[in-house]
Amino acid sequence: MAGMVANSVQYLCGLARLGHDVCYLEFGRDWDCCFNPRTGYSTSDPQYGLAFTERLFKPLGFSEKWAYYDMLQKAWLGPLSPDVSNAIADADIVINLCGSNDLQMGLQDVPLRIFIEQDPVFTQVKHLRDDAKRANAAMHNRFYTYACNWGKPTCSVPDDGIDWKPTVPPVVMSNWPTAENGNVTWSRNYTTVMQWQSYPPAVWEGVEYHSKDYSFPDYFDLPLKTKAGLEIALKGGDGPTRDKLTRSGWKLRDPLPVSLELPEFTDYLSRSRGEFSLAKHGYVVSGSGWFSERSACYLASGRPVVVQDTGFSRWLPTDSAIGAFTDPQQALAQLDRIESDYPRYCREARQIANEYFDGDRVLQKFLASATANCSQSTSSRKNNQ
Image 1: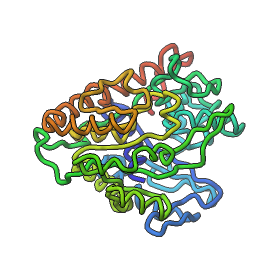
Image 2: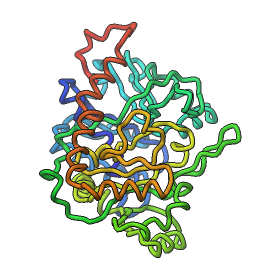
Image 3: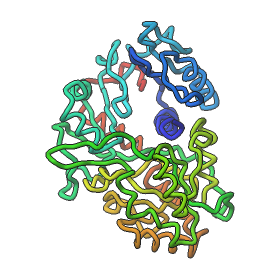
């Protein structure tokens, strides 16, 4: 929902800030792939998504720069639809976030075809177990992963034979306003937005990699041991699970109002006291070094984060506005530390976001890496992305 939308927007706005001509293309499927969060159902009708995208892109300056291909109608929809073929023909680079689109209709001929995977372990296991997924990935010629420890001895993300290079989530800092000096918050709670179980466990060579639900048992009673309020905008979890969370002091919030539209999502993060979150079990046990794009946005909003260590402590400063933990005792200690000098850590959060996740820096480095030693010149193709 809005969290994944924010992720895409960072790339669109960030690349445009660097002077590139950017457009957004999305392919539907030939089944009921159009989700309407207001009804909770997926159908073949794209009207909700089209209206949402129009609302989203207009204030961002992309009102004429997007199109959606409806597989059932066999037609492009959206303002760019009359000119999609020209946009693809002129493009230097196609960036496929999460590999969510198949490369088709000329995209397979764009000189640089970049796959950015943001779900380490689960992506690699899919490629190892699903020939169609692996074939789609193989149509690209540059590969980036949010497993920032990829290739290091401490990282055990399964090797799917792809030459992944680490990258981090970019954040367009101007899109994330911060309160002056970290003195103003509207909530006393550390929050997060999450899904209880994203999908069944991924299994490879006898090792099971689980979602966040598997990470929670040791942390159920954490709110009873800290003065900090802990709140989850939670999707999923059965009745007994949600009852247990509530009895243990977790504040559960309806995730729909805070994730339906991007402004409400941005507001929810910036009004929180900070983020407290566990990571998917698969990210942790593999030592992936993954760091959440959502956590980066909390930092950009001047909000400290207390988050489960996936191995990111090898490349990010912890015991700072980032409080990394590996067990409940460390989690409590990190919350106490942040609370002991809260305004300082709010200021530090913004500084860390600037240093490690600023979209200008991250995307310049990413593009320099992607275009290095490129065998096919793109200088004559209008420098489009």
